[in-house]
Length: 92
Image 1 (tube, rainbow, N blue to C red):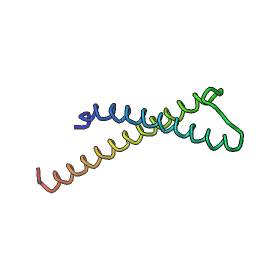
Image 2: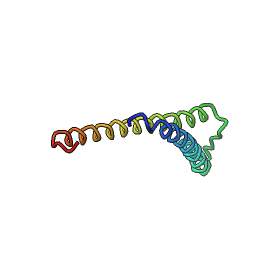
Image 3: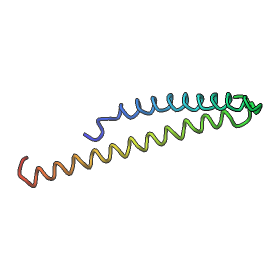
Image 4: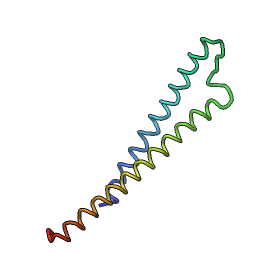
């Protein structure tokens, strides 16, 4: 039962990767427009900008996968404790 969600984790990973990359790019573009008003324009070609966008995407992917893993562990623990309660009461 625990290993049944293998496909879901890869689908979630793919979704989080695309979403976090788009979010990082949106934040950079919003920052560009804010900085351009103050004549401090920064382009995507500047050193470190691409690395920051990719780094933020990877950070969000790892955070999402950790959350998915913790949720799976919590779900398994709840199922096991419910099964133990049912066995103790004799509802098997």
